[in-house]
Length: 301
Image 1 (spheres, helix red, strand yellow):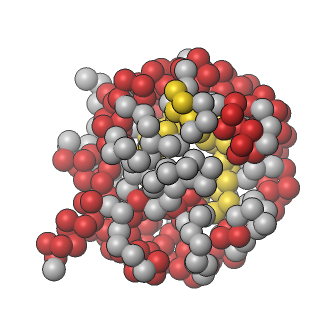
Image 2: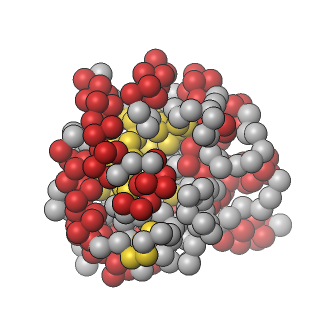
């Protein structure tokens, strides 16, 4: 097995995790969550998105949050920018990386952003071009790479198709995302192998939802391919508004516990990470979605 000795995690909690919360989360809470995450050792954090407040009201404070975070030179702060207007709004806030997104499923693309996969990539091309010209890194989120709520199983060829399109417009790295959490290790492996036809191992990351309890086994399947970059969400925050029944992203705490137990370094202090998850869970008025955090907090008493 070609297991990496070190893994870098991107915590998507502040953006992907909080975007669908019904209750408003003040900018100060989001800023504090980012501060706690980086204090725990996270070196890549997805902070916010520059989308229309009409569609995602929770992210209307994007500029305020970006202005408020205590920046560290060794942390990559990324933001989601769905179009050129979003990018122009994001640019003054100095993100280190922007994220564009596409689906490996035509049906999901139509339901999510009202256009075909090819049209979505055409729409993103000027965004990618503008970001690269400004010296800002570009990541491409590839959703529904193993399953779709409307189409069912998604063939690896569709993942390769999307990865190729993203590579063609200048995207530097891609996330292989199991958006509705239906993936199992063999399917996930096939999706990664498809993406790796266009991107090197250092330029792919795994993004797993734990809807069916498969996120950690899928993480292991990707690790065995040599993948060393993964996305997760503190306290297991987040779901997908377009994927009925999709529970949250895999909890960062659970991934860190597994990796540390395998002797794989993350640079993350698990206790501080659990405290960060507890902070945001307390604000939201519910328990953490992390099993590891739940176990540790019970032991702490």
